[in-house]
Image (cartoon, rainbow over the protein chains, first blue to last red):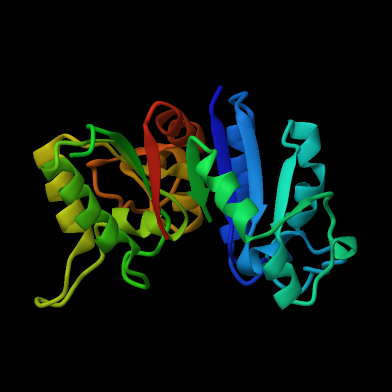
Length: 118
Length: 133
């Protein structure tokens, strides 16, 4: 079994990068590997709750992040400084995520077999 | 000297609105020259625009598609365009054209059309994946 890390670095609903990154995660989940997801920089906005995307012209895919456990993806991480810089706390997220500081992020990345950045 | 690596490449940045495809090409050329193997280059998201053979450049501009085609044919490297990302952006192969009932196709024939499973497979069988976004 290999360890795959998917990193989301941009916010949702101004492009389809997050939606297509999520598609990559869902396909990866079908391969029975050890998947982790890290939300970094503006990527933390992907998992902010209470999003009303109705007027953006992009389908509301972000709620699927909240259902990743059903796909066997349970290792979800957010970067502490990215959250703080954007005034976000874990209570505002639609997922249960582990908060990682800079050193933890470095460790997480170095522990992976493959890192995919979106 | 680094041991020979099997490298899976992901290009997700647009052909001309980002430097991703150009930088990825320079990386792949250097990797092959250094004795490494490129297992596959997967064009995803806006990177699928590299497959568009209708892109028309001024004479002094860098033709990403043309240079990728040259690289792939001289080094037998597989170029794969993600089917769903390409269709979403109107990059259509000849077979997709018939399948989808479209009036035209524009994907260069050297590109294979594949799903994210093809990418994940290549990722799992390579030493590393390098992303250009």
